[in-house]
Length: 357
Image 1 (cartoon, rainbow, N blue to C red):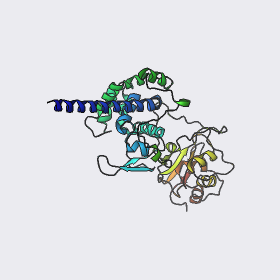
Image 2 (cartoon, rainbow, N blue to C red; image 1 turned 60 degrees about the vertical axis):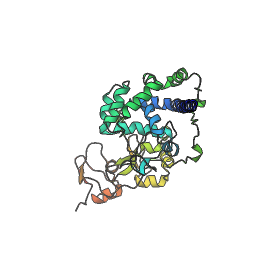
Image 3 (cartoon, rainbow, N blue to C red; image 1 turned 45 degrees about the vertical axis):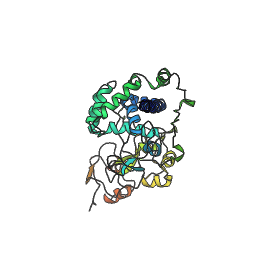
Image 4 (cartoon, helix red, strand yellow; image 1 turned 90 degrees about the horizontal axis):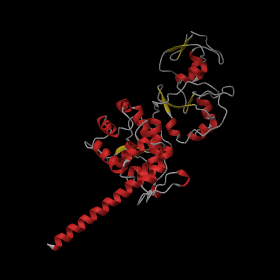
């Protein structure tokens, strides 16, 4: 009887120790990524509590192979449109394709965009951003995970660690909140950057991947204004270059949209493309000045468009028609029997397919 009692005590003690270790790892994950989650909430109105709970659950508090080797914190699979780096991992099926990121920040941003750009998640953004229960059930209903208990697991994590308290603060208040929640363990990161100190972290084995590409998405709160003005002041817009890549309907050509501060030099450096190639891909001459909202292609444009013809309107010129339709400017002039430099009049028909006779 004594032996049985001793065995039970040892089992219970072991279970308690394991549970405490699990809690410590969960809390460390929260301390490391809470600010990131709140910053994404400020941009996309996704509750920080939901983002953090998903991160804890999907990564096993940062210990999963996907988190360690692919910086994938939300178990997002490749999908048909993904053209970036990949990692193959057993999930519902053996050897499934998962997205691979260059950093945790890129994973968090892609998670926000993944939800914001897909129509089957659109109803989530009608919910109160402080209603974590509705968001948890909404994610399950929309098909984010196959686990029938997914919503209740998220809710359990949120309530266990009081993650909903992050839904009511700004990113400026995150460290104060962490100090309040974890007075004995939280330390302010140096230079206000998250410290990742996961137990048995396999970071030495993590290899940085090449920039990845994802489909561009909308920001429901901040629609892009159609501003047209010249760019003069240099500015670093390429913290996550892959997240700026968009795909043109004409053959899925990769392009970016110019922002204030972009230069050909910064674009060339961000995407490892020579300035000469960028000029050729975009028919750029010394007379053409980069303008905000202008398309810049990262690969050669096509010889034909997706539609047969285009009727010119006020403000159109051959260069803009070429860029907007992903068609080589040289081919555009040739199709329409026009001399280089010649411009159409309002109401002219410009062929994008075939050739005038």
